[in-house]
Length: 82
View 1: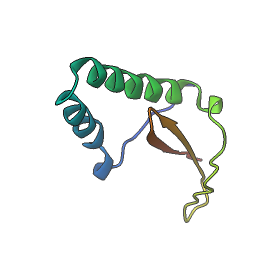
View 2: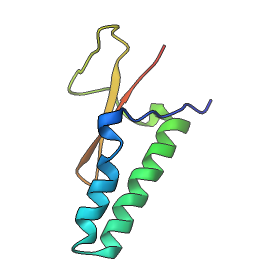
View 3: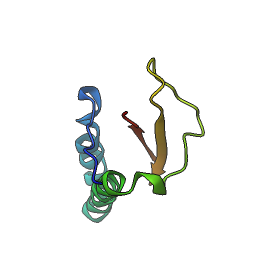
């Protein structure tokens, strides 16, 4: 089952901002980071179980849970929906 990954509004601009920042120093590295984030998001939608449970134990009011993982030292957070 493929899930839909939704980026909260405050977070939607972060990948573009990261890309622009790295681009100042290296086009190659900016493209690499962008590709890793996009590929990781795609993998998360397809196979969320490949990531371990949240070691930071972040919970929500409805206790739906999250998975967090780091890509190139960039923390990606996802919320498991019921």
